[in-house]
Length: 107
Length: 117
Image (cartoon, rainbow over all chains, first blue to last red; front, side, top):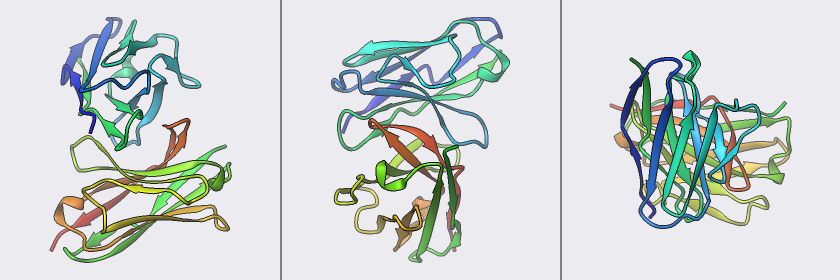
């Protein structure tokens, strides 16, 4: 099973700042990695897929890159609605696995 | 507009059974792979089950194999999760999710299953 390790567990930043979230895989997953955003009381929503592609409707301030075992999600300038929990997920191997999440909170 | 509506959750005793439903609209269920993903209270996401477009391939996580079973009814455009021998650690919000090219592009709103005596 591919284990995804997300860091940091919690990130405290202010609106307008840049956020950098990391996801590391225990073995190569190629570019088969997605990022999801989850707000309290809501279902997760797709942000990025295939490591670096923005999903439909996702603002350009979100970007992501990586290949193999190391992946990064960046939010260039935080908006109030960006404070949420972010999960990475690999779909290279069964079983599908998720990271434990990074909570992005307002400082 | 694509919509997934989860239902069927509730309170059940350990060892009990439940059937979750996911009604799909805005697309044809049989044209997409589908999955169930759960989230225990205050915890992260855990993939549970998968069904292929033709229904011939089904996969389950080790933690639920033999107790939870995914199925679908294409005439009703609906996905199901049959849950038996439920345990306290099955308590979670259960989401159905549509797979597009292997990632999940649409999610239901979730339905809460509580296993407690």
